[in-house]
Length: 229
Ligand SMILES: [Zn+2]
Image 1 (cartoon, protein in one colour):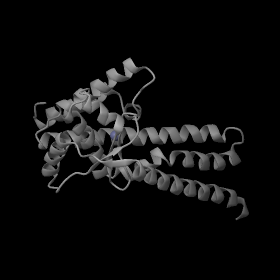
Image 2 (cartoon, protein in one colour; image 1 turned 90 degrees about the vertical axis):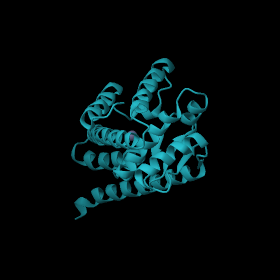
Image 3 (spheres, helix red, strand yellow; image 1 turned 120 degrees about the horizontal axis):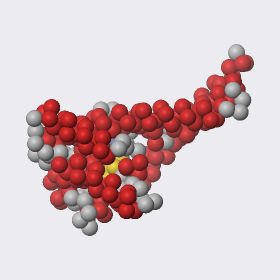
Image 4 (spheres, helix red, strand yellow; image 1 turned 60 degrees about the vertical axis):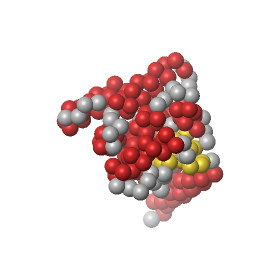
């Protein structure tokens, strides 16, 4: 029994870290966000809400600069201030921003957002706990292996989630008459943005699969559904 005590401790530590970081993230979102009130975006959201037979879709602005969309584990949808600014100065259209909201709605509807907390804030906790356990068996390499395993797991989880959320968004955008064109044009814009900005890569792109593959996947859906973009 005593032999397993360190492992148990490591797991408890990991769990505590995870709970703490989830709580901290939720608090940060509460403190640094306001509801999105833009009339044009509200109108687009209302069209998507109607397609989903929901009274309305509530979206929040998260007061940070990196261009990103986020689905919180409690189901709230966030667009960063940086992303909203791109809409305000005309770099991104309302329809394109709506496609991000549709994508995040997909994460919520498909139950990814709860699981994704492991990506966003629990990843370090998992890595630490795993490293503690593995180091006991493989001294010297435990941390390295834990690192590789966590990264691999997170990448696999998020990749399939992204394609599923894209598919959900494509269906919702089609049903609400917005269409999939803005979804695809936004991918291109964000890619161009990363190339010109150099170090200013939007976090939203970093955690997502390659632009070309995402566009191809959407085109395959269009062909399957018989819709025109
Ligand atoms: Zn996503």
